[in-house]
Length: 289
Image: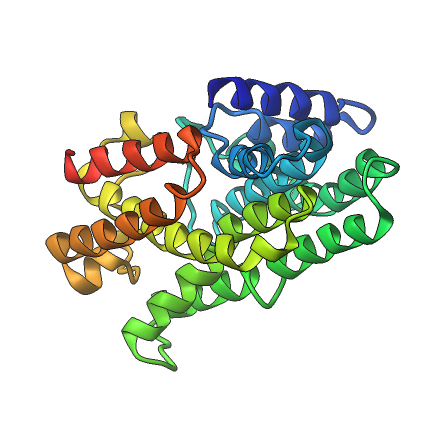
């Protein structure tokens, strides 16, 4: 897993060069290169590897997905969204470069990512596969997934619940969190030429995405700033709808455990040490086993 992270970091650094006007590229690169787990690009590359594909061919797509994830973090931290001053232990993008540049840096990453898929993958995969990858990217980045989840998340903070609290919470996190795990896993299967496995692996991604969000909600309750690198207890203080606020800490842990066990059942069929390692670390931090 560490070798995959190093590979992703090297390519991200290579893909985003500081040119005129320097401020926007510095802003893009600042959050992009902050130390992180790189879960989403690593998952994309590992799916490709375990299905017999070429990791080198998958790197542009994996890095594009990380750019989309980082864009969502930059915008999520803005005063008009979650208004958070820290990300991965460092000042948020808007605290360093100002709100306007932070908005533009997010926009730039959002649009540069599909450009990267097209330009760096052309000639290595059939055009119809590249088109399918770009379609997956735009679908999960847009108003039917990631943005929809963010909108309902904001509405829920204001008490505007059109659906029940349970339905609202599931909608937010299936679209805001799980979407960014579904995208790399689906793209990995597509790059590896295993279209027939996309839906089965998509089920894993949905379950993992929800488990990861519950993990994040629990950690916001029990962790420290030093451990997570962001403001702790902010969700609780702002009255945000979370699995812990809705179900309580113990029930959230139970729900997390059930989802993680389902993830193990799917992953064990493919004998992936990388995925098993990811699941092991999450389970240990929440359940202590």
